Image (cartoon, rainbow, N blue to C red; front, top):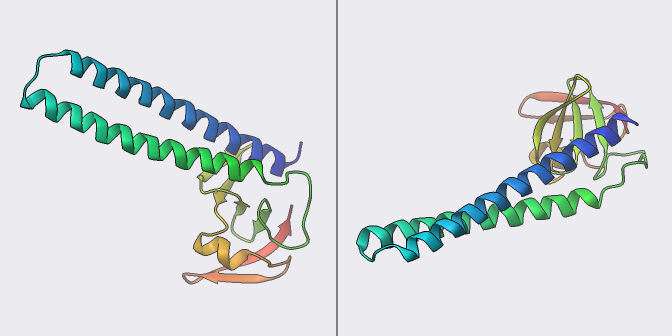
Length: 149
């Protein structure tokens, strides 16, 4: 299995874990709201219930965003290598590996640090369409494209 495929699998695993955590949190919040509804009425209980509902909405938004990330990730090609940087490319620069996919940040695969970034991120935008031996610059740092997988 290539580093690109391992990176993809690791990203998918991280997203699936996050989805499960968020679903668990949603269930706990729903149970908390049900329990609050059963307890005696009063301002204190109403405030607690409202806070739980706000937290539930925030968690639902996070879950939707994570599900969107999973959909975006699943659209990526893991076996095809493009001659230029595109969505799904694993890029080796002079300073780091970058996986142009979804914004998951720093991950480690087989002792190699890879940064999973969105193509819409500032660096992702600068890299899109570049080829090996091209250079991109962001915030004073030069990124020399060594290889694209």
